[in-house]
Length: 148
Image 1 (cartoon, rainbow, N blue to C red):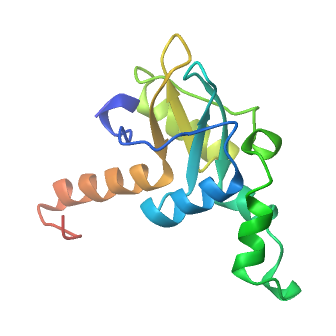
Image 2 (image 1 turned 90 degrees about the vertical axis):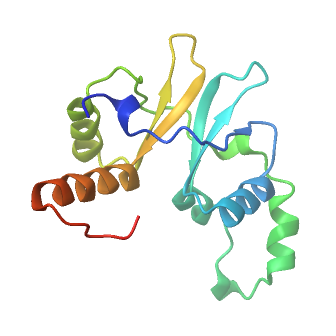
Image 3 (image 1 turned 135 degrees about the vertical axis):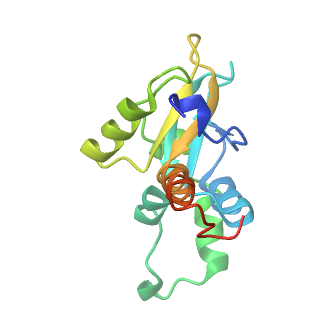
């Protein structure tokens, strides 16, 4: 395994920038992802919204806001207004060591993978790197550490 394409997640669930935080919460809860790539109307990558970002825009449970009220608030907040647009990205042909080093150095939880036309083709996450580490350990030890 030498390139980002070798371990990136290709099964991605992007949303559009004109959708609301309600859609982000539903997606994260349904498919269990922590990073949601955001696309524009031309299907080009324009930003990202992480679980941490979403928490920052949530009213604390300590404020005694029930889930229905939070949901109503989320329906009126556009992703475009809260997404991060200055996002480091990578390509499928980037050497894996370069991408992982960038993630570690900058404390990124993910790197969206884009093509030359800025279309999203995948995402590499810290979870992908952990899976790789487990496979390499299993290979070197000749045993399976974690059930597949």
